[in-house]
Image 1 (tube, helix red, strand yellow):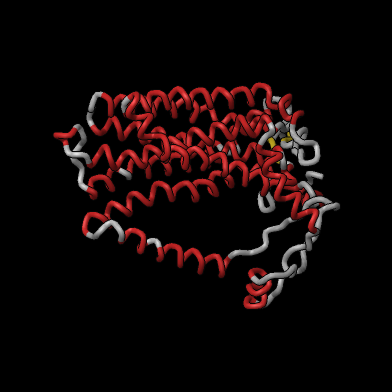
Image 2 (cartoon, rainbow, N blue to C red):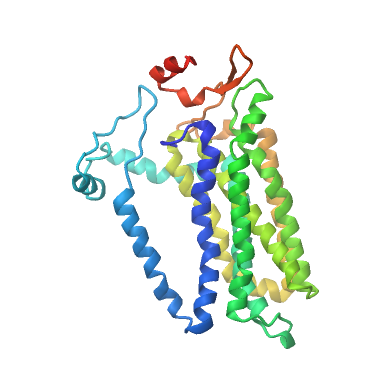
Length: 370
Protein backbone atom coordinates (compact mmCIF):
# COMPACT_ATOMS: atom_id res chain seq x y z
CA UNK A 1 0.00 0.00 0.00
CA UNK A 2 2.93 2.35 0.67
CA UNK A 3 4.84 1.72 -2.52
CA UNK A 4 2.18 1.14 -5.19
CA UNK A 5 -0.71 3.19 -6.49
CA UNK A 6 -4.21 1.81 -6.94
CA UNK A 7 -3.74 1.00 -10.61
CA UNK A 8 -0.59 -1.04 -9.81
CA UNK A 9 -1.67 -2.99 -6.74
CA UNK A 10 -3.25 -5.95 -8.51
CA UNK A 11 0.11 -7.03 -9.90
CA UNK A 12 1.90 -6.11 -6.68
CA UNK A 13 -0.36 -8.28 -4.51
CA UNK A 14 -0.09 -11.20 -6.93
CA UNK A 15 3.70 -11.04 -6.90
CA UNK A 16 3.87 -10.71 -3.11
CA UNK A 17 1.43 -13.50 -2.28
CA UNK A 18 2.72 -15.91 -4.91
CA UNK A 19 6.20 -15.54 -3.48
CA UNK A 20 4.71 -16.75 -0.17
CA UNK A 21 2.40 -19.42 -1.57
CA UNK A 22 5.03 -20.94 -3.86
CA UNK A 23 6.92 -22.25 -0.81
CA UNK A 24 4.11 -24.78 -0.39
CA UNK A 25 4.87 -26.06 -3.89
CA UNK A 26 8.66 -25.86 -3.86
CA UNK A 27 9.12 -27.73 -0.56
CA UNK A 28 7.63 -31.10 -1.62
CA UNK A 29 9.61 -31.01 -4.85
CA UNK A 30 12.96 -30.42 -3.18
CA UNK A 31 12.03 -32.90 -0.45
CA UNK A 32 11.44 -35.61 -3.04
CA UNK A 33 14.84 -35.11 -4.62
CA UNK A 34 16.53 -35.21 -1.20
CA UNK A 35 14.66 -38.26 0.11
CA UNK A 36 15.46 -40.22 -3.06
CA UNK A 37 19.07 -40.59 -1.92
CA UNK A 38 19.17 -39.44 1.72
CA UNK A 39 17.17 -40.08 4.94
CA UNK A 40 14.05 -37.94 5.21
CA UNK A 41 15.44 -36.02 8.21
CA UNK A 42 17.93 -34.38 5.83
CA UNK A 43 15.11 -32.25 4.40
CA UNK A 44 15.07 -30.17 7.58
CA UNK A 45 18.81 -29.47 7.39
CA UNK A 46 18.43 -28.30 3.81
CA UNK A 47 16.05 -25.55 4.95
CA UNK A 48 18.92 -23.81 6.73
CA UNK A 49 20.49 -22.60 3.49
CA UNK A 50 17.46 -20.69 2.10
CA UNK A 51 16.65 -19.34 5.57
CA UNK A 52 20.21 -18.04 5.90
CA UNK A 53 20.04 -16.51 2.42
CA UNK A 54 16.72 -14.84 3.26
CA UNK A 55 18.17 -13.34 6.44
CA UNK A 56 21.13 -11.97 4.51
CA UNK A 57 18.94 -10.45 1.78
CA UNK A 58 16.62 -8.87 4.35
CA UNK A 59 19.57 -7.35 6.19
CA UNK A 60 21.02 -5.88 2.99
CA UNK A 61 17.93 -4.71 1.12
CA UNK A 62 14.98 -4.20 3.51
CA UNK A 63 14.03 -0.52 3.80
CA UNK A 64 11.29 1.50 5.47
CA UNK A 65 8.72 1.73 2.68
CA UNK A 66 6.46 4.52 3.88
CA UNK A 67 5.35 6.91 1.16
CA UNK A 68 2.81 9.39 2.62
CA UNK A 69 0.64 10.93 -0.11
CA UNK A 70 -1.78 12.99 1.97
CA UNK A 71 -0.95 16.23 3.80
CA UNK A 72 -2.32 14.76 7.04
CA UNK A 73 -0.11 11.66 6.86
CA UNK A 74 2.71 11.02 9.32
CA UNK A 75 6.16 11.70 7.95
CA UNK A 76 8.95 9.36 8.92
CA UNK A 77 12.46 10.38 10.04
CA UNK A 78 14.96 11.06 7.29
CA UNK A 79 16.83 7.96 6.18
CA UNK A 80 20.48 7.55 7.16
CA UNK A 81 22.88 7.85 4.21
CA UNK A 82 25.48 5.49 5.65
CA UNK A 83 24.64 1.84 4.89
CA UNK A 84 25.75 0.62 8.32
CA UNK A 85 23.95 3.39 10.21
CA UNK A 86 20.85 2.74 8.13
CA UNK A 87 20.93 -0.98 8.99
CA UNK A 88 21.37 -0.21 12.69
CA UNK A 89 18.50 2.30 12.61
CA UNK A 90 16.26 -0.17 10.76
CA UNK A 91 16.80 -3.31 12.83
CA UNK A 92 17.65 -2.14 16.35
CA UNK A 93 14.95 -0.88 18.75
CA UNK A 94 13.94 2.74 18.60
CA UNK A 95 12.10 5.23 16.40
CA UNK A 96 14.90 6.14 14.03
CA UNK A 97 13.05 4.96 10.91
CA UNK A 98 9.46 5.08 12.18
CA UNK A 99 7.21 7.40 14.10
CA UNK A 100 6.59 6.77 17.77
CA UNK A 101 3.48 4.93 18.93
CA UNK A 102 1.42 5.27 22.08
CA UNK A 103 0.16 2.39 24.25
CA UNK A 104 -3.34 3.11 22.93
CA UNK A 105 -2.15 2.74 19.34
CA UNK A 106 -0.43 -0.55 20.15
CA UNK A 107 -3.61 -1.88 21.77
CA UNK A 108 -5.63 -0.68 18.79
CA UNK A 109 -3.35 -2.47 16.35
CA UNK A 110 -3.77 -5.70 18.36
CA UNK A 111 -7.57 -5.47 18.34
CA UNK A 112 -7.95 -4.24 14.73
CA UNK A 113 -7.43 -7.66 13.03
CA UNK A 114 -10.21 -9.19 15.13
CA UNK A 115 -12.59 -6.32 14.42
CA UNK A 116 -11.84 -6.44 10.70
CA UNK A 117 -12.08 -10.24 10.71
CA UNK A 118 -15.75 -10.24 11.77
CA UNK A 119 -16.83 -7.71 9.14
CA UNK A 120 -19.14 -9.34 6.54
CA UNK A 121 -16.89 -8.59 3.60
CA UNK A 122 -13.88 -10.10 5.38
CA UNK A 123 -15.82 -13.22 6.31
CA UNK A 124 -16.92 -13.82 2.71
CA UNK A 125 -13.52 -13.07 1.15
CA UNK A 126 -11.69 -14.90 3.93
CA UNK A 127 -13.93 -17.94 3.57
CA UNK A 128 -12.78 -18.43 -0.01
CA UNK A 129 -9.11 -18.15 0.99
CA UNK A 130 -9.88 -20.48 3.91
CA UNK A 131 -11.32 -23.19 1.63
CA UNK A 132 -9.23 -22.78 -1.53
CA UNK A 133 -5.82 -22.67 0.14
CA UNK A 134 -6.75 -25.37 2.66
CA UNK A 135 -7.58 -27.91 -0.03
CA UNK A 136 -4.45 -26.98 -1.98
CA UNK A 137 -2.40 -27.88 1.10
CA UNK A 138 -4.36 -31.11 1.46
CA UNK A 139 -3.56 -32.03 -2.15
CA UNK A 140 0.12 -31.49 -1.47
CA UNK A 141 -0.03 -33.75 1.57
CA UNK A 142 -2.15 -36.50 0.07
CA UNK A 143 -0.21 -36.62 -3.20
CA UNK A 144 2.74 -38.35 -1.59
CA UNK A 145 0.53 -41.00 -0.01
CA UNK A 146 -1.48 -41.70 -3.17
CA UNK A 147 1.43 -41.62 -5.62
CA UNK A 148 3.94 -43.62 -3.55
CA UNK A 149 1.54 -46.30 -2.36
CA UNK A 150 2.38 -49.56 -4.23
CA UNK A 151 0.16 -50.44 -7.18
CA UNK A 152 -0.94 -53.69 -5.52
CA UNK A 153 -2.33 -51.58 -2.66
CA UNK A 154 -4.25 -49.26 -5.01
CA UNK A 155 -1.62 -46.55 -5.43
CA UNK A 156 0.57 -45.54 -8.35
CA UNK A 157 3.92 -46.94 -7.20
CA UNK A 158 5.89 -43.72 -7.61
CA UNK A 159 9.35 -43.36 -6.11
CA UNK A 160 10.23 -40.22 -4.09
CA UNK A 161 11.94 -38.90 -7.24
CA UNK A 162 8.82 -39.60 -9.31
CA UNK A 163 6.74 -37.81 -6.71
CA UNK A 164 9.08 -34.82 -6.87
CA UNK A 165 8.80 -34.71 -10.65
CA UNK A 166 4.99 -34.90 -10.39
CA UNK A 167 5.13 -31.77 -8.23
CA UNK A 168 6.29 -29.77 -11.24
CA UNK A 169 2.62 -29.87 -12.23
CA UNK A 170 2.02 -27.48 -9.36
CA UNK A 171 4.99 -25.36 -10.43
CA UNK A 172 3.32 -24.83 -13.81
CA UNK A 173 0.14 -23.84 -11.96
CA UNK A 174 2.02 -21.23 -9.93
CA UNK A 175 3.78 -19.86 -13.03
CA UNK A 176 0.49 -19.73 -14.95
CA UNK A 177 -1.14 -17.90 -12.01
CA UNK A 178 1.70 -15.37 -11.94
CA UNK A 179 1.34 -14.72 -15.68
CA UNK A 180 -2.44 -14.44 -15.41
CA UNK A 181 -2.10 -12.13 -12.41
CA UNK A 182 0.29 -9.90 -14.30
CA UNK A 183 -1.96 -9.85 -17.35
CA UNK A 184 -5.28 -9.34 -15.55
CA UNK A 185 -4.49 -8.17 -12.01
CA UNK A 186 -4.99 -4.49 -12.81
CA UNK A 187 -6.25 -4.58 -16.38
CA UNK A 188 -9.57 -6.29 -15.63
CA UNK A 189 -10.58 -4.06 -12.67
CA UNK A 190 -9.59 -0.92 -14.59
CA UNK A 191 -11.59 -2.14 -17.60
CA UNK A 192 -14.63 -2.61 -15.34
CA UNK A 193 -14.14 0.89 -13.96
CA UNK A 194 -13.84 2.47 -17.40
CA UNK A 195 -17.11 0.85 -18.44
CA UNK A 196 -18.78 2.72 -15.57
CA UNK A 197 -17.37 6.16 -16.15
CA UNK A 198 -13.91 5.69 -14.67
CA UNK A 199 -15.18 5.75 -11.07
CA UNK A 200 -13.46 3.26 -8.79
CA UNK A 201 -15.14 0.73 -6.48
CA UNK A 202 -13.08 -1.88 -4.58
CA UNK A 203 -15.40 -4.65 -5.81
CA UNK A 204 -13.86 -4.34 -9.27
CA UNK A 205 -10.89 -6.29 -7.89
CA UNK A 206 -13.17 -9.33 -7.61
CA UNK A 207 -13.60 -9.62 -11.37
CA UNK A 208 -10.31 -11.51 -11.24
CA UNK A 209 -12.06 -14.21 -9.19
CA UNK A 210 -14.16 -15.41 -12.10
CA UNK A 211 -11.52 -17.75 -13.53
CA UNK A 212 -10.42 -19.30 -10.19
CA UNK A 213 -14.05 -19.76 -9.13
CA UNK A 214 -14.66 -21.80 -12.27
CA UNK A 215 -11.44 -23.83 -12.40
CA UNK A 216 -10.99 -24.62 -8.69
CA UNK A 217 -14.04 -26.89 -8.30
CA UNK A 218 -13.32 -28.54 -11.66
CA UNK A 219 -9.77 -29.34 -10.53
CA UNK A 220 -10.89 -30.79 -7.20
CA UNK A 221 -13.55 -32.88 -8.94
CA UNK A 222 -11.06 -34.22 -11.48
CA UNK A 223 -8.56 -35.14 -8.79
CA UNK A 224 -11.24 -36.86 -6.73
CA UNK A 225 -12.53 -38.83 -9.74
CA UNK A 226 -8.98 -39.82 -10.68
CA UNK A 227 -8.33 -41.21 -7.21
CA UNK A 228 -11.76 -42.83 -6.87
CA UNK A 229 -11.56 -44.74 -10.16
CA UNK A 230 -7.77 -45.05 -10.28
CA UNK A 231 -7.52 -43.19 -13.58
CA UNK A 232 -4.23 -42.38 -15.29
CA UNK A 233 -2.00 -40.19 -13.13
CA UNK A 234 -2.23 -37.43 -15.75
CA UNK A 235 -5.87 -36.91 -14.69
CA UNK A 236 -4.58 -36.25 -11.18
CA UNK A 237 -1.92 -33.97 -12.64
CA UNK A 238 -4.53 -31.91 -14.53
CA UNK A 239 -6.68 -31.59 -11.42
CA UNK A 240 -3.64 -30.65 -9.34
CA UNK A 241 -2.67 -27.99 -11.88
CA UNK A 242 -6.15 -26.43 -11.93
CA UNK A 243 -6.46 -26.37 -8.13
CA UNK A 244 -3.00 -24.84 -7.69
CA UNK A 245 -3.62 -22.27 -10.42
CA UNK A 246 -7.01 -21.28 -9.01
CA UNK A 247 -5.98 -20.93 -5.37
CA UNK A 248 -2.69 -19.19 -6.16
CA UNK A 249 -4.47 -16.62 -8.32
CA UNK A 250 -7.48 -16.16 -6.03
CA UNK A 251 -5.85 -15.70 -2.61
CA UNK A 252 -4.01 -12.46 -3.59
CA UNK A 253 -7.24 -11.08 -5.08
CA UNK A 254 -9.16 -11.70 -1.85
CA UNK A 255 -6.35 -10.13 0.19
CA UNK A 256 -6.11 -7.14 -2.16
CA UNK A 257 -9.86 -6.52 -1.91
CA UNK A 258 -10.02 -6.62 1.89
CA UNK A 259 -6.92 -4.46 2.30
CA UNK A 260 -8.38 -1.84 -0.05
CA UNK A 261 -11.52 -1.78 2.09
CA UNK A 262 -9.36 -0.86 5.11
CA UNK A 263 -6.51 1.08 3.53
CA UNK A 264 -5.52 2.84 6.77
CA UNK A 265 -5.32 -0.53 8.55
CA UNK A 266 -3.65 -2.54 5.79
CA UNK A 267 -1.42 -4.52 8.17
CA UNK A 268 -4.35 -5.56 10.34
CA UNK A 269 -6.36 -6.61 7.28
CA UNK A 270 -3.43 -8.65 5.97
CA UNK A 271 -2.96 -10.34 9.35
CA UNK A 272 -6.55 -11.56 9.60
CA UNK A 273 -6.68 -12.63 5.95
CA UNK A 274 -3.55 -14.72 6.42
CA UNK A 275 -5.18 -16.23 9.51
CA UNK A 276 -8.19 -17.20 7.40
CA UNK A 277 -5.86 -18.64 4.74
CA UNK A 278 -3.91 -20.83 7.17
CA UNK A 279 -6.63 -21.90 9.62
CA UNK A 280 -8.27 -24.59 7.50
CA UNK A 281 -4.95 -25.83 6.14
CA UNK A 282 -3.76 -26.46 9.71
CA UNK A 283 -7.08 -27.89 10.91
CA UNK A 284 -7.39 -30.43 8.07
CA UNK A 285 -4.66 -32.57 9.56
CA UNK A 286 -6.84 -33.24 12.62
CA UNK A 287 -9.92 -34.56 10.84
CA UNK A 288 -8.91 -35.64 7.35
CA UNK A 289 -8.42 -39.33 8.25
CA UNK A 290 -11.83 -39.74 9.96
CA UNK A 291 -13.42 -37.88 7.05
CA UNK A 292 -11.65 -40.11 4.51
CA UNK A 293 -12.64 -43.27 6.39
CA UNK A 294 -16.31 -42.25 6.21
CA UNK A 295 -16.64 -41.30 2.53
CA UNK A 296 -13.42 -42.47 0.82
CA UNK A 297 -10.60 -40.30 -0.47
CA UNK A 298 -12.30 -39.75 -3.83
CA UNK A 299 -15.38 -38.25 -2.27
CA UNK A 300 -13.31 -36.13 0.10
CA UNK A 301 -12.24 -34.19 -2.96
CA UNK A 302 -15.68 -34.45 -4.53
CA UNK A 303 -17.13 -32.76 -1.47
CA UNK A 304 -14.23 -30.30 -1.51
CA UNK A 305 -15.29 -29.25 -5.02
CA UNK A 306 -18.75 -28.33 -3.72
CA UNK A 307 -17.28 -26.51 -0.71
CA UNK A 308 -15.03 -24.54 -3.05
CA UNK A 309 -17.97 -23.67 -5.27
CA UNK A 310 -19.98 -22.54 -2.26
CA UNK A 311 -17.15 -20.29 -1.10
CA UNK A 312 -16.88 -18.87 -4.62
CA UNK A 313 -20.60 -18.01 -4.52
CA UNK A 314 -19.84 -16.00 -1.40
CA UNK A 315 -17.36 -13.94 -3.42
CA UNK A 316 -20.10 -13.55 -6.02
CA UNK A 317 -22.26 -11.99 -3.30
CA UNK A 318 -19.42 -9.52 -2.64
CA UNK A 319 -19.20 -8.66 -6.32
CA UNK A 320 -22.96 -8.10 -6.38
CA UNK A 321 -23.62 -6.44 -3.03
CA UNK A 322 -20.17 -5.56 -1.70
CA UNK A 323 -20.89 -1.83 -1.58
CA UNK A 324 -23.92 -2.50 0.61
CA UNK A 325 -22.09 -4.94 2.87
CA UNK A 326 -19.26 -2.46 3.39
CA UNK A 327 -21.71 -0.29 5.34
CA UNK A 328 -21.39 -2.86 8.13
CA UNK A 329 -17.60 -2.43 8.34
CA UNK A 330 -16.32 -0.94 11.60
CA UNK A 331 -16.55 2.82 11.06
CA UNK A 332 -13.36 3.61 12.93
CA UNK A 333 -11.32 1.44 10.53
CA UNK A 334 -13.21 1.72 7.26
CA UNK A 335 -11.32 3.68 4.62
CA UNK A 336 -11.41 3.03 0.88
CA UNK A 337 -10.68 4.77 -2.40
CA UNK A 338 -14.35 4.52 -3.31
CA UNK A 339 -15.36 7.07 -5.93
CA UNK A 340 -11.85 7.95 -7.09
CA UNK A 341 -11.62 9.01 -10.72
CA UNK A 342 -9.02 6.65 -12.14
CA UNK A 343 -9.25 7.30 -15.87
CA UNK A 344 -9.57 10.41 -18.00
CA UNK A 345 -9.61 11.00 -21.73
CA UNK A 346 -7.31 13.64 -23.16
CA UNK A 347 -8.04 15.83 -26.17
CA UNK A 348 -6.79 13.13 -28.52
CA UNK A 349 -9.17 10.59 -27.01
CA UNK A 350 -6.41 8.67 -25.24
CA UNK A 351 -7.07 7.26 -21.80
CA UNK A 352 -4.64 8.09 -19.02
CA UNK A 353 -4.52 6.89 -15.45
CA UNK A 354 -4.54 9.71 -12.89
CA UNK A 355 -4.02 7.63 -9.76
CA UNK A 356 -0.27 7.72 -10.34
CA UNK A 357 -0.33 11.48 -9.74
CA UNK A 358 -2.47 11.49 -6.62
CA UNK A 359 -0.74 13.35 -3.82
CA UNK A 360 2.05 14.59 -6.10
CA UNK A 361 0.88 17.97 -7.38
CA UNK A 362 4.22 18.86 -8.98
CA UNK A 363 4.30 15.71 -11.09
CA UNK A 364 0.64 16.17 -11.97
CA UNK A 365 1.26 19.68 -13.27
CA UNK A 366 4.36 18.64 -15.21
CA UNK A 367 2.43 15.91 -16.99
CA UNK A 368 -0.64 18.01 -17.62
CA UNK A 369 -2.96 15.84 -15.57
CA UNK A 370 -3.61 18.34 -12.78
